[in-house]
Image (cartoon, rainbow, N blue to C red; front, side, top):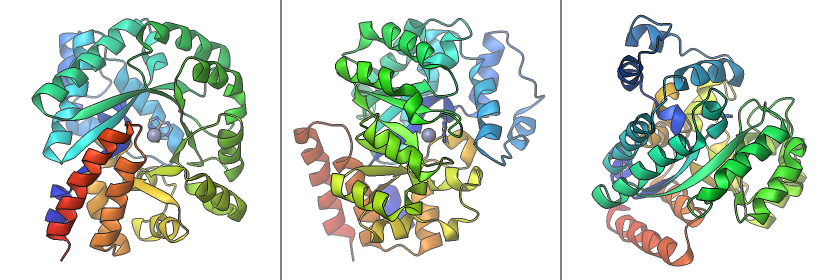
Length: 336
Ligand code: ADE
Ligand code: ZN
């Protein structure tokens, strides 16, 4: 089963590039930028990765991102992740970045974007991994700040496919960003949002009805509301579920109690993703491997999850069809 998962063609749809920052790379970039990290060693830093909730994690995650200054830093971060994609048979990745984490501390939007974009272009050529870029607004900041970010993104709008909404969920409902989502959609961006990770099912209703999102990041708390589940199924909207993240942030107490299988049984379209792999104990394949074991998923279940990852990607129809064909060929050869 482990080899079946490792070799399976798949896409990753929920990934924060800042969350791929491995401690070793963080220390080396900090050194070349002459920035102090408040930890003596990689091991000491890793020991701090103990979270009781989303906010605990975010505090450390934003601190780590502080050492990223030059376009080359963003390039190195992104390329390192894309090399891991190639190793894991992740054929396609939809990468979120948080521009405000960087612009707030004086790093230009252009610097951030150019580094990430160049790495994506090189990865397509050298690693044969395709990518799309998602720009996420930080929900703990104001809608006005999100509008500023939207303006800064416009020179790159042909290279940014979608917008997202992330950071501290509780107390920052989707309704706070209704106008900036409307304006972003007007500019051609596809709307996505984190919803129902720590927030109540009502936040998912808002994300659907007010922000018009076409895919839900996490969405675990949809299970609190039967009518909402029906609505998500009816609208054929997928959830980008992140099993190891859910355990690390105590959204779920144990992987054995993870609702992923129940979600699938209810007809929800589920995908498996790593969220912030450097912080949560595993890349996307590790997420598949551990959730398979915890919930005793079959090869057919795993195939369905990978199928959803291509089907509910933001790729055009023709490219989806090519990836789905590759997946089907693989499954037909290895299903027994
Ligand atoms: N930013 C990075 N990871 C996140 C998560 N899991 N939830 C909300 N915001 C995030
Ligand atoms: Zn996330």
